[in-house]
Image (spheres, protein in one colour):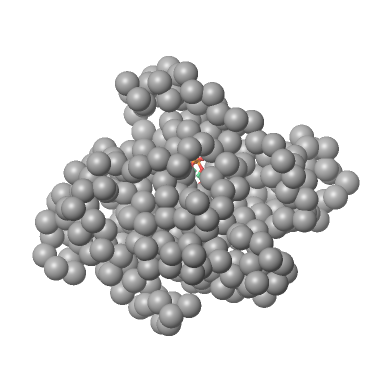
Length: 322
Ligand SMILES: NC(=O)c1ccc[n+]([C@@H]2O[C@H](COP(=O)([O-])OP(=O)(O)OC[C@H]3O[C@@H](n4cnc5c(N)ncnc54)[C@H](OP(=O)(O)O)[C@@H]3O)[C@@H](O)[C@H]2O)c1
């Protein structure tokens, strides 16, 4: 009932306020929620917007559309399209290096790019949703932290990094929690036992875990950057492009428009330290699923974080000390 109320009744505040002087980065912003969030930031005066996309041509088309509809087409350079392929750890690291050296500041970073394929495919040695939605998302987020911290220090602001998660994080019992010590990611990588209907929810659960685990280790009072995650609700976008007829029907009846869903991204990314480590839904800080809040979930969260950090250390030695 909560889901139906949220989808059909809740009205989400239209983004207001000024982003003049702010630099905003949105990943996965050539279409969908990321593009509409970028359009809001452009409308509200952001000084610089980076569309981080895997297909630069599509990104360029999105930038032109945003420039035209926000009537800022005379200020072309304020939207830049940068290549970022979350299926490649090299690409993620190259992007982070470029952002570190080329951008004077980053006030808002939305790690939004995500996939929901129906088939098991390996990318960088792991199942694609684990690579893109989880490992690359945290690789990128952690690599961006020094720039966000520098922005906080130099400009006396509190930057925010928001990860786009989903309420479906609560739709899984996370069967991999019973894997042997240190084997959670290994069990997720077993094609023979993979339940692909459960995989997208699991990937979104791991995002919620990661945000909470990071914030516990770097609490708001001791850390100058806010990290939170957002649930946009069920929205029209290209995400379920591979899903079947049933999803098309459900979306026709229940989904929010892409623009409405994007309001939740703008809202969460504009929150401050009160949202650090939290899950934001319907533009409100909310508790995540009962499983996340349970003792069992807590234990799973710590195990996932330890394994994730070990993976990230292998990809980018020294990342845990950043
Ligand atoms: N729509 C919903 O109902 C809903 C609900 C809850 C959460 N979410 C989350 O919201 C986020 C945005 O999704 P959306 O609904 O806006 O879907 P979308 O329209 O499919 O947009 C996803 C974006 O991510 C990009 N992307 C995918 N794989 C990538 C990769 N390897 N490297 C770089 N970019 C990549 C896509 O680029 P291409 O166009 O090149 O593929 C696209 O720009 C996702 O994290 C999704 O899980 C969506």
